[in-house]
Image (cartoon, rainbow, N blue to C red; front, side, top):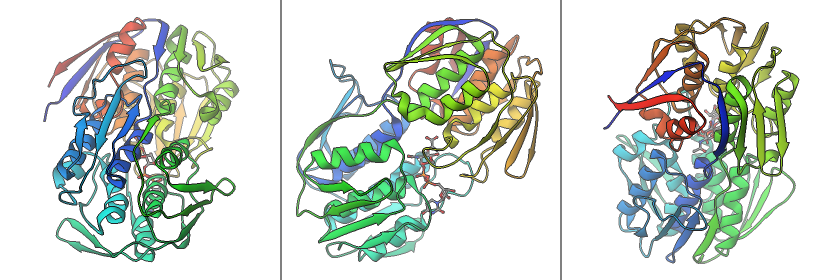
Length: 427
Ligand code: EPU
């Protein structure tokens, strides 16, 4: 596998426009939905990131045909992927795919619904703590699937899935998406309660409706899906990536000299905007864009990650970097994943003063950061370290930077365009 080192010479002011790509975590389930119909799905605004490439490759191995391997179909609607699954050749997701992206678990529901069989290697992805899929399995079993472990594979079989009334025992984003897709082709009506409310879930539901699914929201956490015998092809534009948008907004808050983050949906980032405003950051929210300037003294914050609309765990690491630049002691509690502070030790190498106590990080802000050699372990931690490198004086090198490209489209290029001194080399 190709890997990369990112080197950054920090302290440069950032200015100008940065355009946000489509949301990785919306495009992934939407690609999995290719399994649900024999006609083509055409997705626009698909981000060019590694997790998407791996998902497209997995779909091809399942029998998907069409354009999409290189995701370079640039057009007026942005990057498009057009894929059809006339037949599910072999309902199998290999360990190579599952190790790279955990989103491979999203193929389980659609494969079962389409052909009554699925073999999925146990998902890998970011090492950010225990990431269970028991709620996905419980729901699918209740719908009639028999699921067992065979070596490193989960093997699931069913006749036609049947509709159920199911309450998720806890909030799960991909679990909600998996069951929504399964329910779309199940026999009878499925009611899913205590569903995740992330915008990516609603975007998937919009795509499914476009494919002919009978799906409607009943309040904010319940979906009612009346199963259909078949779905058809559709065209859909993926929503903007709120996590990418938030990452550049945070960068603008300490290094910005008028950074404009374009093509965003501000409503998807309410909790981040509230936090930054309370810190005294200089940000303005326009129609589909954010403006951010650094230079203001920032106040510390107390942040707790929560399911949407709470503060997103996927921005916790990046915010932690920003908090090293605030005056005073901040607290960051991580409640979604049990091992998502791996960026902290690396930020400490830059001179940050952070102490982790259980599920909480205490950030004593105001330390002057200096360049160092860092090693990243997961996607969002990588972004946090890049931000750290931008804030630090001197040179920072980030090893294992492959992780960044799993979910950020050309982050070095976008930051260069804003004036950052940043380069990538092959490791
Ligand atoms: N959980 C269970 N049982 C389940 C499912 C989840 O106990 O069956 C627990 C997990 O162990 C975790 C929590 O519930 O502690 C939340 O997990 P969730 O299932 O919501 O996470 P996910 O669906 O695996 C998605 C995103 C993540 C993001 C989380 C939380 C995708 C492809 N991934 O993961 O994105 O952090 O929701 O918002 O949508 C990222 O993009 O960097 C990333 C990790």
